[in-house]
Length: 363
Image (cartoon, rainbow, N blue to C red; front, side, top):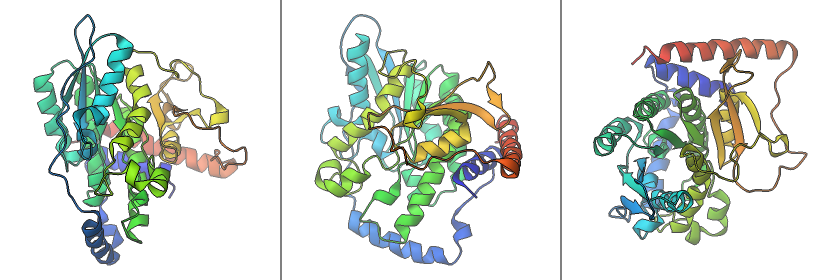
């Protein structure tokens, strides 16, 4: 089963309230548990907490723009030395400078949080800020390391996005990072972690788009830098980003947050460029492609006035990071042809219909 189809299946099961957990790995999971214990000893947890970055950033006339940060230790900034080095602070500072207005950052993220914790965080955030302008969610890594059912993860994320959208917030989700790049984690656990984190990221994208948000793939954003300069891009625990790593993640999220806030970015209004591997696709296809390309945004779009096609919700994929164009010989997935295309289209339609119809009634 391909990643796009797995993403649709996970999202559909999430809507029904089912679960896809670690049980399917069978007896081999015992081996992975042993490897995980070794990884924890290698990685360690040397931090007492994260800097408190909630507050006002920037200056100017007018009421502050209300920005929420929700999620786990990466949203909280664990590994940063000061409050101004977190993802939330970097985004708030940049948004304030471009808008000419202050930005009030309210960070309710919790170190160690998993997706089921998002509901409580969102409730807390909306008690403090009843009408936020935008919210950034970063979640997923602890779901993978904690062996949480992926469909359970996706269901809680979808609920959080829905609640924030109902409060009037634009929502940007940084999807689950690729844990396969964490070199202290031994094999075969690293390969399993890569597949699980990528599958979760793709399923997160499907659910977020269906519930009115947009996603940015974090993927292996720090992968090459970790190999080349681990002491620069990762903090002393060799797992959480360093201040430089957080700056890189913030730069990937910033264009999407600016657009969500109605501010101009370099890509505002730009049409997809096929030379950059960009396109308008069914959301599951866009999600699959985004997983492989960190810094890529997926957002909902219409095609000739229609939100949906035979293969589900339409979405636009933009490579918003500034990297060279793909090699012309780079393998790009193209739609299947002939009988394979017909069969796949039928399955896509069935899966998408299941997810759409069940999302409004299932708990």
